[in-house]
Image 1 (cartoon, rainbow, N blue to C red):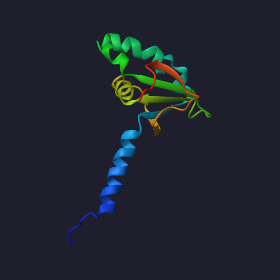
Image 2: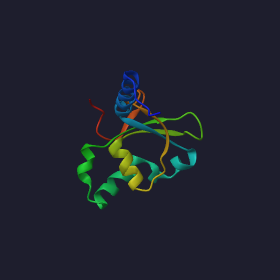
Image 3: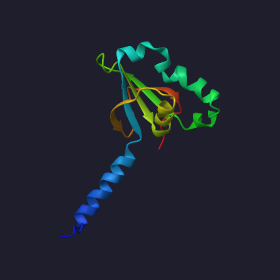
Image 4: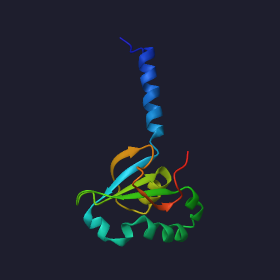
Length: 118
């Protein structure tokens, strides 16, 4: 028997696609050990990397917020937009993903790049 989607199936699929697209920021947790290495701070390491790799045009597309975590396993929380996350991975940095949000919380501070805008 062949599966034939109902209108509810199609609606649910569209809703989940829309929900995924609405998550503009990926939440990355850094451990206490990672925080001790200054090169794991985007505000320290990304600028020189962009210059060395001749990608300074990305500065206007990067948006990274940070917030203090509540445990040794999540000492610092980084909220990165898609461009920042791609660059972070290209730099070979750890990216332990712990969630996704439409926008960072009001308590998070802009760490590197440009502020969030819709």
